[in-house]
Amino acid sequence: MKLLFAVLLDDPAVSKRRIWSIILGDLAHMTRGVRIGALFGLLVVLTWLANRSIDIGPYDPPIAIGIGFIALLFAAAGFIGARHSGTIAGGIRVGFVAGLVSAITVPGEAWLFHNYFGDLRDFVFTYSIAAAIVMAVVIFGAELACFMEHKARARHGLHAFRAAWRDSELTT
Image 1 (cartoon, rainbow, N blue to C red):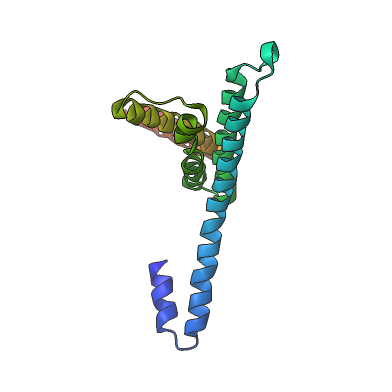
Image 2 (tube, rainbow, N blue to C red):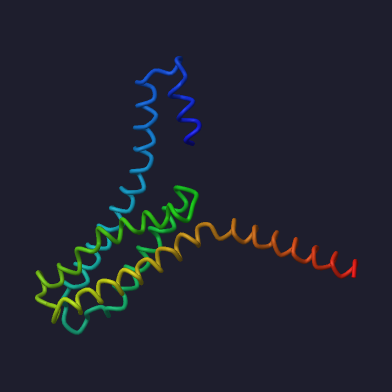
């Protein structure tokens, strides 16, 4: 990529305006994943808010339903990001942005529902554990999107290993 960009800069037939349009086009493509992640983060915040706000007495849905739906949203963010970009890293980037946007739920829990943390250490540990779980779910979704490609690669690698093993047994 660097070589192509260097060649474009040195080519007198390519105008500076064309180079800038290429750069801005690439930035627009990169920000699409950010927008998708922000959308999923907003959906997570709305789900959290609905789950915390609904009070219908004995008919309240169990909290596991809301948490399960939020986990599905994060897995979907990783899946769609990986499908969109074609890489697992692209899915992780979308899920990371969704996690950043949805992180407002932690201080929101304190501000809206008066559930304060005892001290800073508890707050940091809770935030860290939540982030680790979210990223694990995002990675699962991103890996799921690329599963068939990895399955074919693994199968090819196993066949090559088996063939090499047989060849080594024949020569000994």
